[in-house]
Length: 70
Image (cartoon, rainbow, N blue to C red; front, top):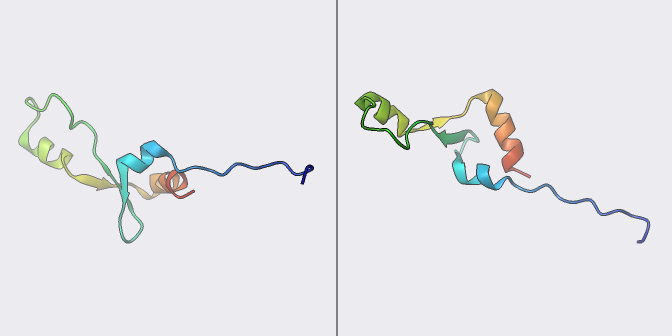
């Protein structure tokens, strides 16, 4: 109909889609920071903990889910 305006759909945020995974229970996981370069001066513990994925806090997961599930 000529009188109706089209409304666009919201899209899933591509950067968030690439950087996060969602667990079976709905929690959002993402890679920790500071694990890309200058690894020779970091301790073994820092490198071990940095290599794991971390569960995003509840406050931030609400924001991530808004970006992911549109």
